[in-house]
Amino acid sequence: MNRTKTHLMSSSRLVSLVAFICLTLLAAGAWSSVGQSRKKITREDSPPRHSPDQDEIDAMAERLQPDKVPVWNMTKLVRLIKLDKIENRDLALTFQNGYDKKINGFLVSVGEVGIYDEYMYNPDQMIPPGGTWVDQVPIEPFTDTKGITLMAVFFDDGTSDGDEGAIKQTSEDRAGQKALIRRALALIRQTLSAPDADSVAALDQLLSELRSLPIERISGRSNFSMGQQSAKDRMISIIQTLRERQDQSAYRTQGFQQPQSEVSIITKLMGVVERHERVASHR
Image 1 (cartoon, helix red, strand yellow):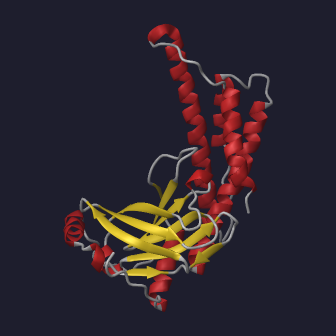
Image 2: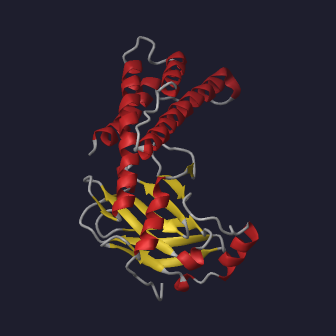
Image 3: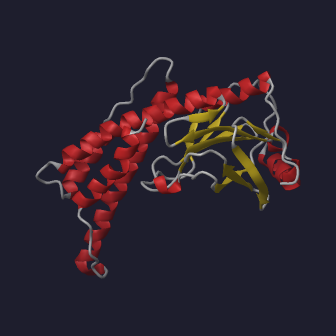
């Protein structure tokens, strides 16, 4: 962009931006065993005021000029190197990793909405040193005035950089995810050791056990609980998808479609364990 501006945050703006990190969790798409996951986080601490309706947001988005959007940076070495508008609906943010380690998570605010992209489940999506990546985000209310803030970045070695409050909240969420995944992996290993492991009945039993996993509620650690819930949803979605594919396979073998070679349930479950062991054991 022509006039990217980097400012120090005022104390009032810093507090308000940190405050939205711990709030409402919205999945921007279905959990995937291999894909990037995204969390949209909105504020609830704002004082009562006029909330723009969709027509106002659309009008703002139409007149929005990318080179006039204010940009703040709470990280040391992530750079926003390009900002484009896509069809008056989205912004394409092109970032560069200026650190000497891989990025496996990134938090940016657009207007008053925080958007967190999680890469730790798939090493192939992590951003290498010097690498660039494009983050396509919706144009949110107040994007023209509150702009974009690069809030925090997380690395594959367990370290991070950026706003301390944002880092703390996101790290708590990640800790909750890892704790739940460890419990889910124990259930999957138990299924793999069962005599009927390669059966639909075993998958149904596993799904029931995953759905019954309790979410720990710890005073003062709401993000930890939120992380557990998102990881629980993720693991249920993965096994549910596996279960549905077994139904599709049965449909084909009944002669409605050409039979195809199928990977065994055991092999698929072992793959789920392998993909998630790294996350569960990571710092």
